[in-house]
Image (cartoon, rainbow, N blue to C red; front, side, top):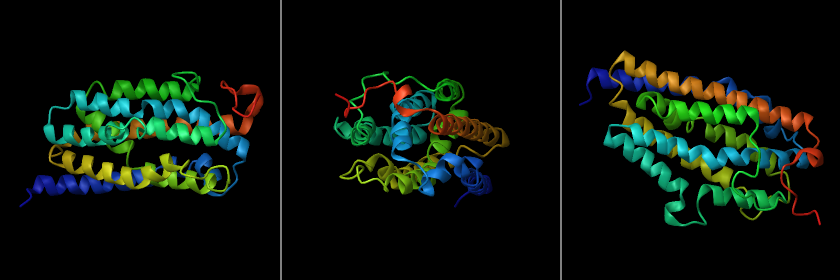
Length: 247
């Protein structure tokens, strides 16, 4: 039988997840534009390239969170996420490898390391998440365990709605987005289930909540930066990589 404190933790997590799913992040103009089919091919290409450095780094936050987490049940939840991120040992199935298929379908040459310059908002996002995930294990759980899992299915559903309009993006090139919808729902549940028993105090809940909303605020600023780039930057004048369609 669950103790009253665990039941209360369950209610806290229900409320927290609801607040995340009502976050302004999920109504961001960039996501609305994709969902409403208002993104051009040139904007889709620019988005794909500028989002690549984010994809390269997301798994590192969860690895950092795992390294400071004292409890094996939550460690195991992070380890399962990392196993998915790294393709369970298959180098062709890592999430960066799957994203590279998306980039090739967008007609970009193979990205090499850090060849794509980080947007300032993404640089800030990276620095914040390394701080959040290397200091307090409960703050890290909020940031890397919940805020990086719960919002992704509705976010990526919006992105997919826009990207599927383009005939060039076929043959599995959108797997990086489609696959994350079910996968991140599972990831979010596993972290939530492991975390629940560690949230019996108000202090613990405040620390998780802090990680969640600092992460969401940073994600909103990241989307702001991406959206500004899609609106204002001329594609052929600003891309840091050469298109594979260029001689």
